[in-house]
Amino acid sequence: MSRIPVSLDPFLPRALNQRWEGALGADELPRVHAAALEGGPLLVRLTLRIVRGALGETRIQGTIDGEIGQQCQRCLQPMLWKCSLRPDVVVVAPGGTPPEVGDDQDVLELGADGQLRPAEFVEDEILLALPLAPRHESCGTGLPREFEAGPAGRAADSPFAILGKLKDRH
Image (cartoon, rainbow, N blue to C red; front, side):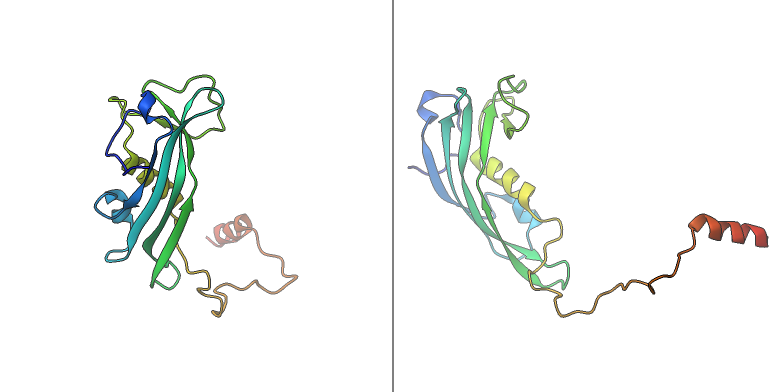
């Protein structure tokens, strides 16, 4: 087990079965920091390793656990979003996905330099998992409903019928 490298070539034999463990903060995750609540917590702990898959493909697997400050979209108060991700991604060289990789597989195509940047990979995984509208689990349970159904049995007028009535008036 070693510290998380800044970048590496995942296809080199020495990268296979290596395990990296560590923590990343706001400085290493600028895009997650931009999406987080200003002044809120942002700490991500991770373990990553590169393995060879059943078909000989190179895969990156691991765990990403973190706590990211968000703003509840219901009450607009700060909240803590906890993520627990288990990525299992096929790593492919620049230029396309090999045919043996199925459509149901998550794929990470490396950039033109062929380098894997673990912090960028972790950042992408977190951004994909961030909720679009974060909300406290218990937020709003005691609030009255904003919209109530109309009286039962009343037939609603068709919007076209209403337009027809307006047209007949003029």
